[in-house]
Length: 93
Length: 242
View 1: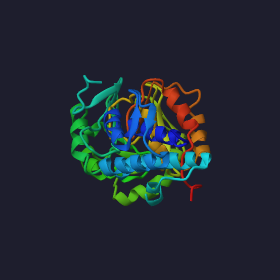
View 2: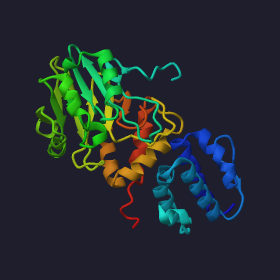
View 3: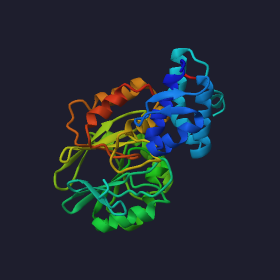
């Protein structure tokens, strides 16, 4: 795992609140993210920026625009704080 | 929670009823409330036109609408105000609309016929016929310049308007384990800045609160102070991100 772990964890936590644990946890394997039962990140496959991008795209495709917008501001601010490049999906939403 | 019959009005505190609805896929549910006080009733944030039939059915199930003397609306948005003209036809001529003067000037465009009770011109309180007083707490720019919350000192319920609301595709009447995240998502998108939000939260310090009843999302009954502290420290708004 790399510097994007915190951002990925932030998105997972946020979707647990907005979409609920069931929908959130069911989607994570498609993005290559493994979590424990409480949603804590155990691992993910691939570069963090790409995983984050895929995760947000999947939530958006499956549950609509607000599944992305619900995370957007928090991710933008945290990425800026950590000086991390944004996932592509947030540049277009 | 599993025992609640959400197709009916739910008494959330003595004489205070949630008359909202479940069963929508919408992420932003609306929560109208009704306070019964003797032979008088106060209707808080009545709701939108599509939800009018459901809300009306629940109101009729607990009160003769002619007993409603005041509708309180925390701001002018259609999700809480658009149904007012329809309710006016049922409630009758003694109704008044309590809101901030900054909101009233906009709300009149819904074509209301009831007079306004400007909370900012009346000592930030509303006295009911019984002598019971509802108190209004000014929360400007959250998200409207005339936004206010309503506090009932009898039941200690805080009707918080958009504050403490949430995006809630996974909705429940009472806030669950992950509600703070849904609440943050809403405030990050709709509230302007941390400093403004923190200032409003400071006004709740020292206030005894049993329940927080927001206009969107879920009712907060477990440890309301925890949620106040979350909003006090939330970095909301995106005006500096451009």
